[in-house]
Length: 179
Image (tube, rainbow, N blue to C red; front, side):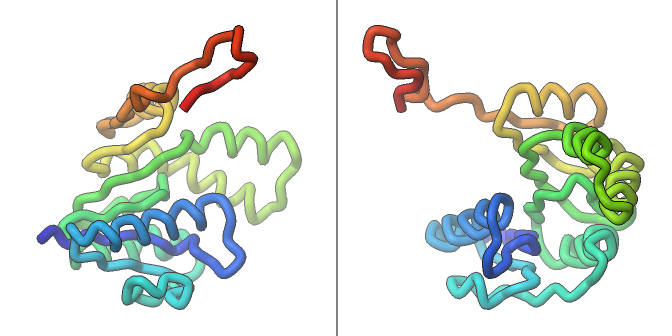
């Protein structure tokens, strides 16, 4: 059985967005029962379906560069949503990327984000292209994201495409999308 590590450090009691995605991923993989799951979380109590390991590393960059490297040694493959993989150490990483960080960084610059966020963005700008090259594969939900990754990193992006039933509807029905 494959020993699959999952970086679920964004899961939080009132978490939205990526927290929900991570929670749903852990639950779905636990339900499948095909993997020996090793889940890393800051709030293990939010994932009662697994025995998650407590992550206390702060700041997040410490977890990404040191904690993920250690975690990767304990598993066959580690699934994460960060674009800042550890630059040193061994391990097989799968990154699930919704969009390249460049858009978020540009938005933060436009709106005048706080100094802490601008500092984090500066680190991300320096690391993400090189660190994604360490990923065995980068899963993307959009072909545009796969293309963006392919354009700037040595990573192998994988866009699974659209499910056959996911298509535009006819105009006469007054609908935009049929699933």
